[in-house]
Length: 115
Image 1 (tube, one colour):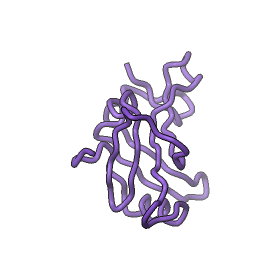
Image 2 (cartoon, helix red, strand yellow):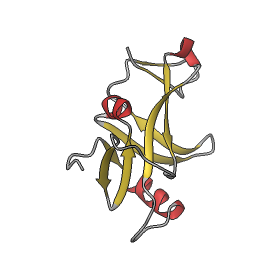
Image 3 (spheres, rainbow, N blue to C red):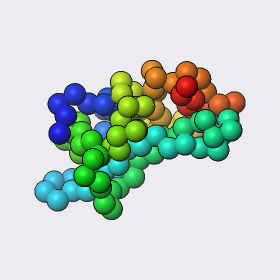
Image 4 (cartoon, rainbow, N blue to C red):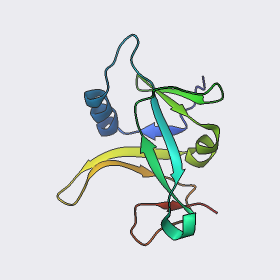
């Protein structure tokens, strides 16, 4: 387990995750990944959060604000230094990841580009 969070989570994001995911002993681990999308000819990535059904031996395990996240190694490299927040506006609601490693955004603004 790493002591340095790969992704920093805002207080709002942690509060929302805790409302959606059970906590305490035996609580599920939360996978976080950067998945390739079809956007920009397959070069775009979206950030995915879920509840882990299984994890791999090589996954990076990160503790942040009392939550346990599992991140696959390729995603860990892409997500290093990212910040996750939860937004609720009239236009959108959900988790938003700001990633300093992104070199651009797709035209729709929902996928990050990494060279």
